[in-house]
Amino acid sequence: MELHINIKTQFDKNPALRVLFFFDESRNYEEHVKLWAYDDIVCIIADATPFHLKYQLENELKEKKVFLYYKRAEPTDIELESFPLADILLANKTTLS
Image 1: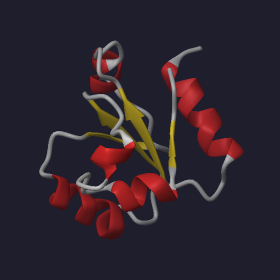
Image 2: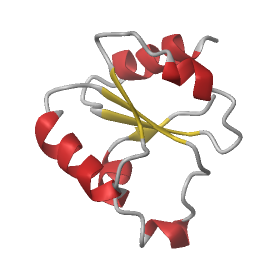
Image 3: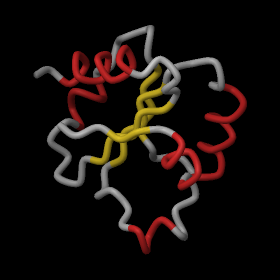
């Protein structure tokens, strides 16, 4: 299934979903994400400082559907304690390729 279709399906099935996290440690989807051109869902590659990103999600993009792409593995339970967006991650959803 094409990545965008999978993402759109997740948002359609979960109307209250605001932020969809995608962890891609192997970077298999990096090029596809760089070419993102879908207006209905904002795509952010999580390269910015985590606190700026948190501000964006909670303020500037609070009315938008956001696909948040990370070039890393999903945080483990232990790592969640220090993951700056843990609250947003736990309140939303992750997708698997």
